[in-house]
Amino acid sequence: MEDVKEKKNKLRTIDLAYIGLSAALIAICSWISIPLTVPITLQTMGICLVAGIFGMKRGTIATVIYLILGAIGVPVFAGFSSGIGVLAGSTGGYLIGFIFTALIVGFVSDKAKGKLWALILSMVAGVLVCYIFGTAWFAVVYAKTSEPASLATILGWCVTPFLIPDAVKIALAAVLTNRLKRFVK
Image (cartoon, rainbow, N blue to C red):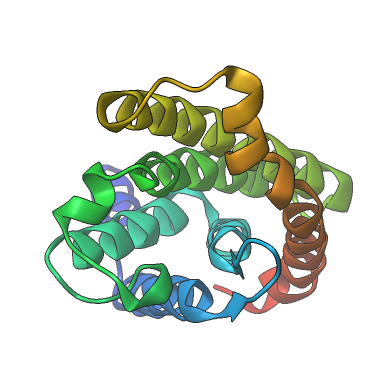
């Protein structure tokens, strides 16, 4: 009985392959930039897609590996950037917030059993938590280097321009997750 439980908790070779491919997918999504008034990357879509398809454990591990790769200098972040400075910088909170997004989306994906509405709500909640964490981080870092800005100003810089693009990315990630999850072991 204990051997079955122990085997279930271990990462199998297929899990490791999925995690590695997922971290690479997140990196590729971060490199894709749509030049609007504020450049939009597909990072949030990649996180939602990976966590939605592969679940909480594999999705979160892939997200953490992506962040570790970026922290040690592999240029996986937006604009092919990397390093601890990016994580400690004004947008680092959003990168760390991806872990919470992966946890939320992956947890619901594991429990929802293909319900599209549940996936969409989890992705909205995950991105919202990422916004909250990242915006708070931005406000603290910005206040250390410049005159403190009002919450409305910071939201205008960090959240408002991304609402519609993130809604589109969430819709796309939810539909793709719903279609692709059945092919994953």
